[in-house]
Image 1 (tube, rainbow, N blue to C red):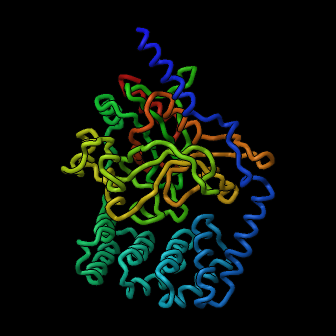
Image 2 (cartoon, rainbow, N blue to C red):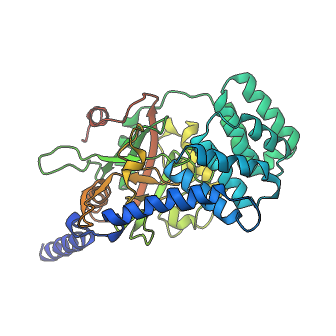
Image 3 (spheres, rainbow, N blue to C red):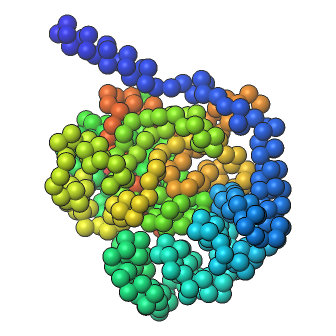
Length: 422
């Protein structure tokens, strides 16, 4: 009994040290004058000035930076369209990175303006990833079967060996996908109680313009609640700035199972100093790390991935998005906070949440006078995950349905109510 008491005290001490107080998190990057200076610089220099310059080898880097800013902050207007016009006119001479940045930015803010230009690029594009970017742009304009079949035929003609190229394999699946009803969420909860892995669930919509909610299920199967017994939920956006499909770099967060490797602090100003959750996609890094199994050095990793899910979910193809994204080469998708001023996105359905380049981004609001956090769903989520022993586990992203509204607490609580060990 004495040894057990000592162990419990040590465990509590470690847990207390692992958690972070919101009041102690600070960054100068969110101060009012710095935010104003950043916005002016982004709009006036990075976008407007660069996009107004004649396009040549000396100015191309500026155009690349401008496209990045457009895709992340969703800038629009005549100066942006002028820059796009210049880039399409000189497309053949651009580097791969600039071509990709252009197509991502056009997808982000000009959904129907450049059909002709994108069609022309696609007809000549020999790079599979850039071809895929063109295809999803044109598919979004018309998701009918006839257009999808025409795009698939064009892909086969352009890339006869498409079925050996992971990004085109997934593009073909994306063009053919028929959405089915999500399996019973209660099965996920019940299965976790058998496996005993600490698990975060991030419930999202098919339309990622609408925010989601995350919850934490501890190793004993119970859900993290506050001191009054109320379920803790955490606002989380799974939309990227460009809003691209899950299998493309800088696309929306893929559905599926991620491996939680612990926590870290980012040195990236736009993410900020709030502890983040380090995640691995399937195939990113070593399998023994992904499965939390030091003996996992071989075997059928796909089968083991499927076995992370209950039987009724293993043939539900959206859960393979994370697997496919990892196979294609997506990396560094984590769950983090944000220092980005939400006012860039005022009027959009996900406001005041902020999009990223494909990560799960929790709501954070900062005091622009002191630089301290006012609200941090991210810090609350990390503390909830660390409130019981263990820094590793799994995170499962699931689209619930296609309602055009943010996932609500009431919806998630109803899902929990169907679980016998709440």
